[in-house]
Structures are given as C-alpha cells and as structure tokens.
Amino acid sequence: MLADRLNALFRKLPAWPIYIVGPLPGIWLYWQGATGALGADPVRAIEHQTGLYALQLIIAGLAVTPLRGFAGLNLLKFRRAIGIMAFAYAGLHLFTWAALDMGLYWAQALGDIVKRPYITIGMAAFLLLVPLVATSNDRAVRRLGAVRWRKLHWLTYPAALLAALHFVWLVKAWPLEPFVYLGAVLGLLGLRVVAKGARSASRRKGAAAPSPTAS
Image 1 (cartoon, rainbow, N blue to C red):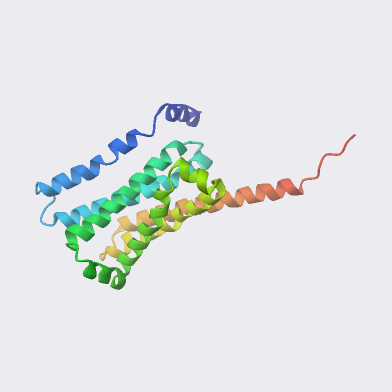
Image 2: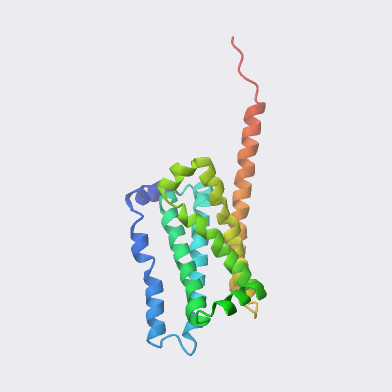
C-alpha cells in the first residue's frame, strides 16, 4: 500500500531539519523588507505573511491526527516541530505588529487589543499557544502525566479556530482566502468529532456484545 511505503519513508526522516528549514521563509521575508523588495508598506506585508505562515503551520499540525486515522499516514514524529514553528511565526507576527507597526507604544497597543475585536481574537489565539509550546517536551509529559498533558493540548483546537477567525475578521474586503483557511480548520475539527464518535460507537458495540460461553 502507498501509505505503508510513505510511512516507511517517514520513519527514516528525522524531525530536526524542520527547525533549520522552518525559519528560512521568515528570514527571507525580513531580508526582502530590509532591501525594499516588499513594496511601499513592508511592515504590513511582513505582518500578513508571518501570520499566514503561523496559520498554515497550525493547520498542518492539526491535520496530523486525521491523516493517521483516515489515510493511515503516521506523521506524529513531526507534529512537535511543526507546532513549535507555528508558535515561532505567531510570535514573529506579534513582534512585527508591536515593534515595527506600533513602535512599542504599549498603551496604544493595549488599547487596540481591547478596542479591535480581530486583534483581541488574535491575541487570545497566541496566548492559548503559550502553554502548548511550553509543554512541548518530554519532561513536561512526564511531569504532567500523559492524560493531563493531552487535555492541556486540547487548547490547540480553540487556538486554531481563533487564529482562523482572526484572519477572516481583519480582512475587510472579504476575499475567499480567509474562508478557505477557516473551512480547513472547521473541516479538520469535524473529522476529529467523527473519529471520536466512531470510537465511542465501537466501544459501546464491544461492551454490548455477549461474552462467549463455555461449551
């Protein structure tokens, strides 16, 4: 099967190159901004693109479990690195807004967070990512225990949804692109609901099955 061949390939690939390759688009983006290659408003271009990279990586991490359940592709070993890179780009997006756009005028920045709903939603999404990246290591899994760690990482779902809504809300012309990303997030969350329902139905069916009797 194709999935088996791909999984054999994935097992041979390490996850660490993601930490090397992942930052390169951000570095190139800032280089373009510094050299005037991003047009008349480079700060706005960097804000947009770093936020888009973060959302794309969040969706990629969200897709790992459905791909395993529905397509048989096991990408779990890459999910931690994908999540950390998603947080890195979300942080770069926030830094670009706070430092380059707002000029580190914290009173004005805090005022915008309160007054502008799309910024409020984006900040909420970022704050939900903080405990996820802080516990994305084996030591945290051992300290929290597997059950508590998994429950904490359910924060991925509202973070992904808020990030997608942030993108939809900030774009005033209502183009198709933000809704594609929102649809992707909703679709992946829906697949998780379907998979959970199927597992629950299977457990109920197994519990209801009569036990074999001795002959």
